[in-house]
Image 1 (tube, helix red, strand yellow):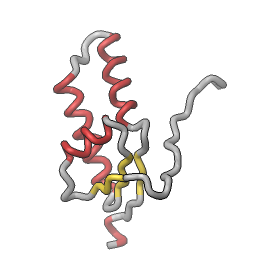
Image 2 (cartoon, rainbow, N blue to C red):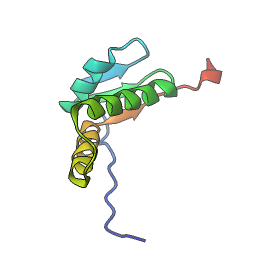
Image 3 (cartoon, helix red, strand yellow):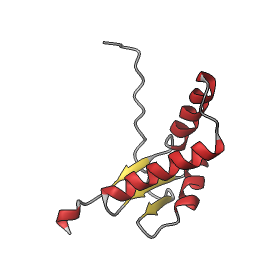
Length: 98
């Protein structure tokens, strides 16, 4: 077991902090750019909406960054992780809970 593993846990939301509410009707591109600027995002609707946001983030980065060499892959992963440094919260409900 590696004791030097860094776990990235977002800090708790602070009262008064601006948090972007992400739902199925939210503009994905605007949310991605806000995340890259350090804004926190909360997924308030279904879990699948959070998965869609992750998929769109990967598409966005794939279009922006080459991903062929080892150093390019590191830059890609660094950009991906940087987008989530500020916070990515879930307050989801399952599809069956209506």
